[in-house]
Image 1 (tube, helix red, strand yellow):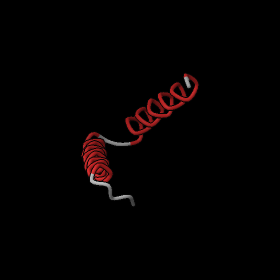
Image 2 (cartoon, helix red, strand yellow; image 1 turned 120 degrees about the vertical axis):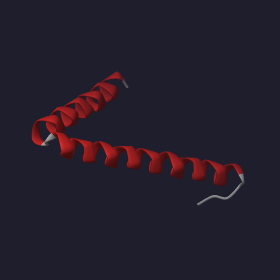
Image 3 (cartoon, rainbow, N blue to C red; image 1 turned 90 degrees about the vertical axis):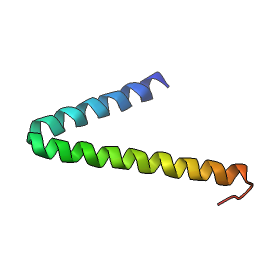
Image 4 (spheres, rainbow, N blue to C red; image 1 turned 135 degrees about the horizontal axis):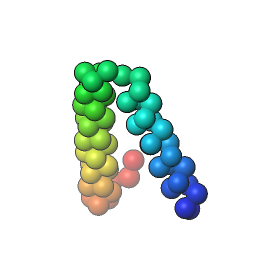
Length: 59
C-alpha cells in the first residue's frame, strides 16, 4: 500500500515538474484551469453516482 502511494506521489511530482518545464506561464494557467474543471466534473459525477446508489438505482 505504501509503495502504491509512493508511486502515485512520484507520478504527480513528475507530471508537475514536466508541465512546469515544458509550458509557458500562460499555458500553465490553461492546464491549471483544465485540471480544475476536470476535478469538479469528477466530484460531480461521483456525487451523482452516490446519490443514485443511495436511491437504490444500480448502474
